[in-house]
Image: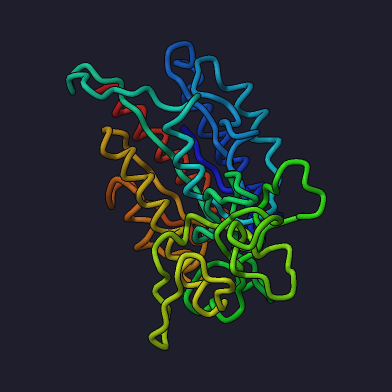
Length: 311
């Protein structure tokens, strides 16, 4: 499964280089595409298309995969955890739990990104109903990559998915959480957050089920805090986004799936140590200082996978 970053920072020459390298990767498997299976999950603020891979794992993939890659456009945040999680779902890898090791199909991930995770998928309750939503980081002056140095420039933005049919709530602000109870009715069935009559105050993010551990100052915030300061919320959110991606990658690795990771950029843009922890080890981690390096790296990984498939 190819998992490719199409976030906003990939715009321009980087996206062009990624598409060329990814298409070249596929050509290595053209002679075996009648039996090998390859799929695609691209990701930005959300992953895939309508909650499913861009293309499910399948045979005869070269032409349709190239078309799907060509359709990628760069915008949005970096929801790596959602993309990695999707690889283990419908259209993704075969569950080989219980299959003896010598009878298992070899399975691989090729994960590519040019930055740190800046989005995550979570559940929230609004008006006593649960929804799926996406929380993502935004910043000023390009400072939204969830690096420690970016924290003062970042805020945590609204969810992408709003309550269905609710034209009065264009988004739900995760900084102002609550109990998620009804927006009308008796006071015992409403959140205590009523100051100013804000439309955001009756949302409960399950992300905050445990109290926030602040970056500094000795403060903690309960799960139903009415408004969490950004200087505490941003570090918590960024750490959670990183950890969820790590946890989802570990699920794949625990099932015997080999995870290759490619990072594009300088140490100011990516964290090589973090990318190494996502991968199956040092031999599965590749850093491309410039987009011109991508083709050679994708080719190397393709050759390595073909050798592993043979032996």
